[in-house]
Amino acid sequence: MTIKRLWTAGCIALLAGAGLLAGPAAFAASSVSNVTFTSSSLVGGATADWTVGFKASNGSGALTSGSTITVTFPGAFSEPSTPVVTPGGFTAGCTVSSVAADGPASGSDLITVTLGSGCSLAKGASGSVKLAGLTNAPVGTYQASTFKVATSSDTTPDSPSSAITITAGAASKLAFVQGPTSGYVGTPLTPAITVQVQDQVGNPVAGAGTGVTLTSATGAPVGSAVTDAGGRATFSNVVFNGTALGITLTASPTATGSSLAASAPSTAFNITVAVSSGATLAEETSDGTGAGVKSVAYYYCTGHSGACTSTNWTAIGSSTAATNYQVTWTSTPTPGAYRVVAVSTDNVSNVSQASGSTPVTVVN
Image (cartoon, rainbow, N blue to C red; front, side, top):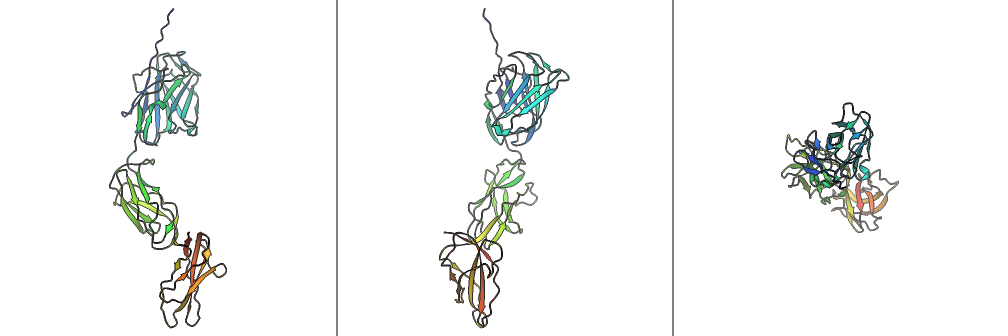
């Protein structure tokens, strides 16, 4: 006797024109969209409710108490550890017995729903489960073959055929992509600082011509730039002319009244003087004669911060050259962080207090 089996292909369709996905062998085409969003949740990273629809058309037939429905999303998506699930299309009073989520760390977002008491869905009937609290993946195009649905009546799903595109939301804020790093007086910071326009959940938003201003924690402007076509502003010539430790920068929209939120403060960085063996240290001020400066002695201490006094300093050298009191650091310590102070002596042997320390980074 010849037995003919009719295998009905199902589909998973996304709203907002996101494409049509061929469904697993267990499900036939439904008269309604099989995957829907309850809000504008094609925005990457936004939290949304997903409703997955299906028909129990093959395998053992009807879904009843104890049957399972498994939905697998691409690994870049992130489901909550205890998603709220609402069954639809089942008999009145249908409850969910348990929900298991494998978590993002597993490499795929898999949610298995076990039906509880009072649940029944006849073979060929339409049903659905709403999964609350899913987080859409980052912006990009995802091959729909990674979306799968299966039930315990037939656990051999087919791969869907269309790709799904998730886009960024509206421009909402600024964020550092490449933040500032420690550098030296008079030298542009490298790598160049970059700031990106983002949507509310951190996806990059394209768009040229947005003005961005960098401001230090003291409120002083550091530089301005405009975004390129990708929505990124690049600051390639940020130069500090004085030393400072623990500086932070904030990126803000240049235009008054802009709806873009300023960035969070950058990570802290230092601006120091760079010296190497044989480098000249200079004290530029001098009154030259009389009871003025006769000589200047220089000392160093380890580390960028803290007191540098005669109890912990090491002599570098001294100078009587009244033009700028240069000395050469002929016995440079190993590369690292130091601070340098100057002590002057006048023509009648009065010795000044040590100057404020200047942070210095010794490099090869």
